[in-house]
Length: 486
Image (cartoon, rainbow, N blue to C red; front, top):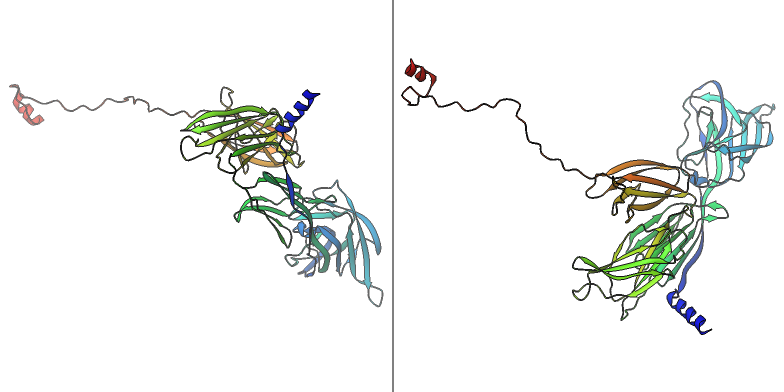
């Protein structure tokens, strides 16, 4: 029984408690009306029919909420007067079809003749997802018809336009009741060593695009403008303000952390899974001290808890203080995108946050994929310390010549690899929908050209020999030479 108590106490010492405090917990809803009413005036009419078969959205993010759309003008309709249920779909996604209700009203004169037609459209289950920019929808039924017009003029900046068979729909009026809104839930938590920012942009199954920005001393250090959920980790000394920018408002969250000096400078290393944020057990932690340009081992141990703390001598100021420290963290089944971290120690507690990428499986975000990059030489030996630029990201290979990127799926990327002593290598990657991709590369050493010894290809012109008279005296030219001999 006593042995059991000792073991539990020992484990408790290995896993220090981490206190946390919720600084902000806020639900944000923002709405901006983007609807409009406008008329399209046609030019010269010419013979032939034109058919309304859909709608065009120049910037669909301005219409993530639609109440109704009304199109009216002096033309006929393919649908009878009354209400109709038809299908609609985005032109680039014909499989995902939804239902629209369309009311057709004929306006008649005193004689009962139709003078104009009005179509009121309700789009059920309207959801734009992650769509941005110009988008079009089509209907399963033809809606309205009229004569063609040459170069109709439609006002710019409207949220929606009529889509027709030749984009020259005749004079008509459009009224649209629509808006752009966002719903987000942000929480900011402060632990002993970092801030945890959780932003939920997907509310009730709908995704809303907003800008999440982090600042340090009024300078932007992080930006994310997607419409997916986001969790970020920052050390206390990395940021001092978070801003969430919605449609018409900027929500600011100032951050401040007070620290007090301690007699024994302590460095705490937190080793976490970059995808889940979970602590990684049994990671190997190596810390070396830099003295006069050489590294000397300080600690090399396996940390079972994922949190490693050590008291280190302050850096700087000359002997006996070291110039700096180097941290190397490895774990089975994980890759460290930063093979080594150089740091200094002062009179305050230092926290180092290591995010390791899992080698197996894909990212938590289903729209992302892992790119496993292997760099080797011509003899299949791994090349460590190579700089790999993949799209807008840059990483360094570890001792196994390996690094991993997390990027968007279904995209094209260009990459470049470079290292001193090797020729640079460039390429392109077409990334599909798989959760993981592998790229193997080989760098060739730079060969310094040597200057070859020139080979004479024609006889050289030698200086003319000295001319002399028969007596041995020198003469200056051929005339004197002939005179002396003949």
